[in-house]
Image 1 (cartoon, one colour):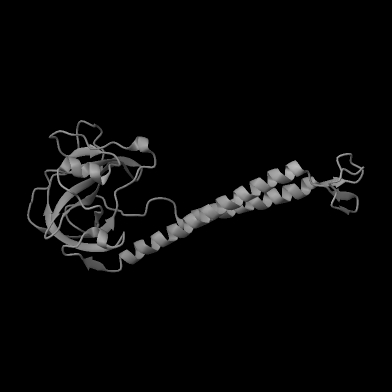
Image 2 (cartoon, rainbow, N blue to C red; image 1 turned 135 degrees about the horizontal axis):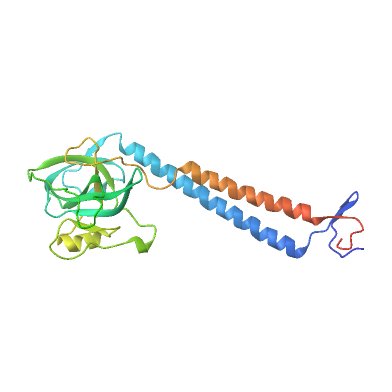
Length: 250
């Protein structure tokens, strides 16, 4: 019996794809292909970011009075200025080796420039929110610092954000703040980029700077998996479209 869907016969079988099945599998295959392309492009972007991170360590750029935003992210630079140890920020929700803690951000009044936040590294959680770690800076002499240019950490979910609290108490605990929020509490405009203090520089804490997120190979692996699913959808469509000769559905 023929339904008008038979395309050709293969011995005892006929190729008679169902229009509904064809549409479903086509939509799935196209979706899987697009998801694979998205992951592949994420991998390409991640690889380019890693290349910038690697190139940035090759040399140190002396910025003098130029803003940190004048060089690419992850570039190592040299700046001079004076720490403002009386007004520091502790970035909450910072994990190192599976332990909770804070990233210490200290304002630096640059010589001949603006104010930049220096990430002096990670300190562990004391076990109590009422007892903050001691991150005091005793000296107020001018210092020369080297480090990488970067941006503030960004929360994956907006629910993880907590702006710095008002009031006279310092340091201020905050979670994924914006630069505008930090500037408002500090009472001074801040440069839009921060400085990740070099691991060998003094007056710092744990500094194991790495790129956040997954490596490029993982994105590329996900892309191949999505494309494999697209191929599997095509195979399933072919198998389900082959019917035995004489089958009423054929």
